[in-house]
Amino acid sequence: MTIKGKAYIAGVFEHPTRKADDKSLAQLHAESAQGALADAGLTRQDVDGYFCAGDAPGLGGLSMADYMGLKLRHIDTTETGGSSYVIHVGHAAEAIAAGKCDVALITLAGRPRAEGMATGTAPRNYGAAPDVAFEFPFGPTVVNQYAMAAMRHMHQYGTTGAQLAWIKVAASHHAQHNPHALLREVVTVDDVVGSPMISDPLHRLDCCVITDGGGSIIVVKPEIAKRLKRPRVRVLGAGEAVKHQMGGQVDLTYTGAVWSGPAAFAEAGVTPADIRYVSIYDSFTITVLLTLEDLGFCPKGQGGKLVSDGNLISGTGRLPFNTDGGGLCNNHPANRGGLTKVVEAVRQLRGEAHPKVQVSNCGLALAHGTGGSLGTRHGSATLIMERE
Amino acid sequence: MAAPERKIPAPEANPETRPFWEAAVAGRLLIGKCTACGKPHYYHSYSVMRRVPAPYALAYVTLDEGVTMMTNIVDCDLDGIRIGQRVRVSFKPTEGGPPVPMFTPDSS
Image (cartoon, rainbow over all chains, first blue to last red; front, side):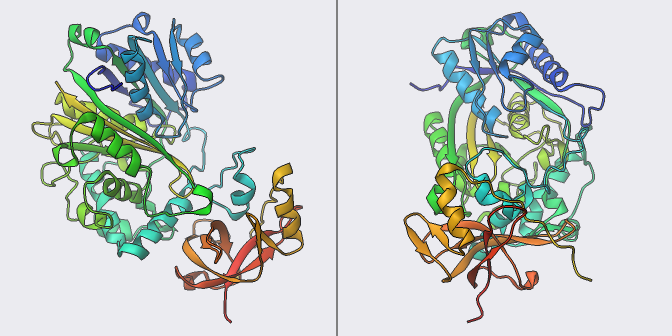
């Protein structure tokens, strides 16, 4: 069975807050859901499928269904970190294709800023996870794990800090036009490589922002999409993968996108050359570089060249990416950036991105999520969508 | 100025990983079915965490037996670490648990 053409993204919403001192986690989820339903022209009474991940409070899907008053016949709480919500779109399309639901609601929310979380630099202890005893004593954090991937790529392919910096520079060029972006100042390569070293070779400006907020996506069956008044965005293909340490055969030079990407392209029946716009998970600059290589936008090891000299900047570059400013400048709600990747891709396909960053004739877009850590184990999700 | 010493959290042994940690107490590094101790190995990658009170080097070391493991590089100049350098295992005490295998540059 394929999901190609069997489901549409009818509504999207990105919560405008970046610091939510006065809102609960459940409220942020519900406000996001309300925003996406309003965008689609639907109400919560239309929802019969619900998708959420580990950021949802309490018993996740059960707590949120109760709080939002949803009557469900399908629920899926697949948890793959920040990639969860990209996977959820694929799973929602599968459920719709199988007749298990007609209107799927996906929500994400979090408040790490309000809670003062040291997201990147404090080692995380996942308790009973089998890897903890063999990793936690060594102080693995989010940033130093991704930094090891960057260090290895530099060693193997000669990638430079300046090349990684171009990714942040492109994101900042886009963020200047987004009134909601946390960081709107345009930065230069020198600004990035001159910012404080956090964990070699990643500087402060190689790292994404920490923000509160959330977002939501509505996926519907074709019959419903056709009677709604919004531009139609059709799901063409989805791929998902998990990469881990493979019994000690660690190779930090590639990501799970080497598997999720080809699966999505095959289902969609398109190639990287056909894609007009990409939303690429950007927890760190290195995440973008590795993902673009692994999705086939350039030969392996050539990512540094691909991202340099403004090539990712909309209007001038040949591969416009993250035109909302991405996680590097705009928003990384709940430390999970997958959902906002889909939101900006939908804006582009609808022609509703900011005019300064709108890609002309944007008929085909890709969104990619990475969740967990490139340094140890991560989920990888690729989604290809088209404007109908 | 000497950096403050970094405290190393104790690893918690599960029933199935207890032999590994018992061997660690005896100064032996177990992998899979074979025992390897004291042999030189090399870095796959590393990163020095700078924005903490006591900077430290997280690393993946590839053992000559073929597996790659997460560890720290210790007892050396953190700025002198390079991918591909040879290293030697050195067990370091933890806070109330068995010692953990760390690595130091091999000078032999």
